[in-house]
Length: 219
Length: 335
Image (cartoon, rainbow over all chains, first blue to last red; front, side, top):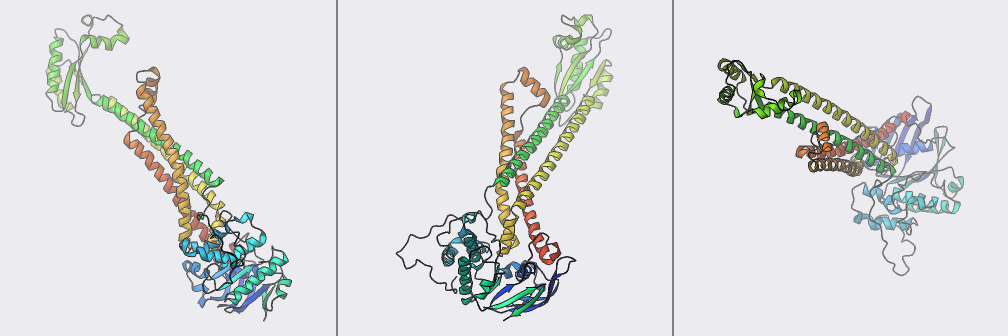
């Protein structure tokens, strides 16, 4: 589904942050992306989300060479990828329901056509009673689940999550992990960037370890 | 979420509950916040000032045109007294000669009383015109659109009545035309300055508000919104703000002119009103003036909306620029 070949990235004239990245992310796969702070996890996630272009190498997303895709087509491709940010990026003036429905709204869909789906998804992530609540009132775990629900709303083929358990207590982290596993079981590929060794030890999944810009993969 | 047959949420087996109610969908941009309200006030103030200047220029222009028209509507024939001249007959003859030309309308001989009133400021009351060699005047009203041939009239008068002198007021009209056009140019210059200040203020204020909402642009971008969608949302939002602001500012200016016009009409012939009329002209804008105010309102609203569109498009371009040139992503988190 996603193929990286000799990908390298540097900011300006600085040293390469990522070097010689060659890997695949297959359909329906589940992997952790880990490494020390500053190793380039977020940068790699941004490459996967097409919000950065590599300074060298080839990236193929869904069978297409990214360097050949016109700018105007990127939003269509991004719709096939769900992303959960570490800081959630929920809009504070919209309710949980409206935040989660946002991906469908920007696609120009009628509210009546997706209302039930959004409510069902919110119930699935355990926010069924919080649909009319504004984000400032939600707890960290609730915000995280709302952000995950928003990323899943348009049935992405791959979900990228940046430190999804960074702001929650261990029981909530466990609950979120179960949610990702369930999602993966239903067919979505998942990439979780995390430092949390405890979280990774709970699942026998592929580990992508970034160290000083180089990637080692343990199947 | 059809093919993702998600597990039924907890509680579905419990007795039936009332269906979940969702509030009417809120706009993607918050309808009112401090920045938006401040922008509305800025737009209202700038619209008020722009309309005030526009109204003032319209008034000056109308007043100058009025003066010019009043003076150029008449010509004067002056008859100087001389030995043995029958003044009354000569005045009548001069009037008839002038009225013989195409383009003249009416002729009035200024009688003794009127001439005495004219000279009163210099010679005082109780003047006997027969004791003084005072020139007498014939006033001829002309058709402004089709004026008579002044050269031919002057020639004929000097041939038939050597004591006659024709004054077509050209000197005064020329001076007034030049003064009026200078005044209108100065007014137009002030109007351009006010409009430029307004454009810049509105542009900067709009950009400020958008930079405060940049996080919304980013979120929309990340959830797969196309640039046109994002631009459309911002345009709608800013069109509402600017229409409200410019309508308020323009309405206050229009009402101010209407109140001043009504006051002037109701207090005609009082010293205050006469002084205001002498200084500012008539506070009456006419249909063209009010249409100008309306046009100003529309221009301000469009300008704000276009600025919003361009600024948002530029923000999106910046996000794309960072994408294609990672070196520019200063301040963005990178672990």
